[in-house]
Picture 1: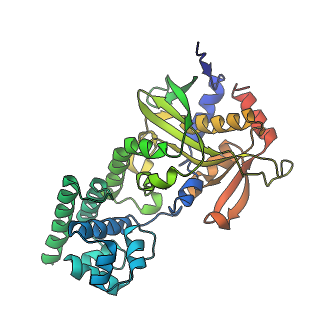
Picture 2: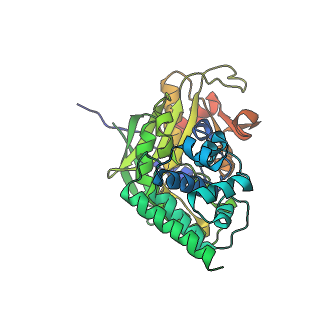
Picture 3: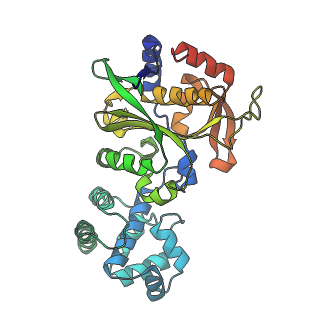
Length: 162
Length: 208
């Protein structure tokens, strides 16, 4: 017979401690996150989305990382860092090369990876929806294709309207 | 099976939940799938209300599902709070190769808290005027860690690296001792709970 135990039998103590916990902003610790390569500082969400956009755009064209790096004449290691958002901001030259090869608007890519100021909240919301609907597996799913097309559409519209 | 109670914020009622043992790091990817929609909704709200990023919850950018392959390689003991088929909170502990740095427990083994989080729907978000569903999740998870440390012969000693927003919780609520920023962990503040304080907590909480 499985006996059920109760962890915290002093309910009054638990309530008082829970109220104190409630008055603090967070209980987060950094150990596992740092082991897994997450920054304990706030990583730019835009940089993460930039990496995802590059990856999906590459895959939608059936290109390996090596092939894209070669076509765009950029360092493979830098491309790997971009797609896994573990590198510093890419250089403007790298962004220009990637924008050209992947037919993406360079100015918007500059904003996404933090090299240019962005004041476009609609773009940020679109970027977030895109990130949420995409997942880094080998073949683009139907949903990823739709997400990518929609986001590229937003990027392109906003570039053309300026 | 271990029963615990969460406190529903809107009416302060106690809700019975279950403490599930034997979680592995690889389970975190599964937990994340149940939490990701709420995280995204919170991020969208923060963007829409133009809340400065320094006020965002610090874990919003952690994407565990992308790290699932790495998580399978890691050795952990974990516990989760389960209620109505949902995970309300999770804690992962490393039970080997961590030793106390603080006297009088120096060099004795301790349980290292490598991950602890409450489900996003339980977060209080003052910038969004949002109160989460349940409170007390953090206390339950930390007391679980302390008890597990005690049961494993580590005297209830625990250690962890706190994110900046959580330092007040660990120093003032749990009563842990800060040992200073750790350059090996992105200068996060390292905290330890000494055996004597752990015993007090376990007694006050009615665990022992």
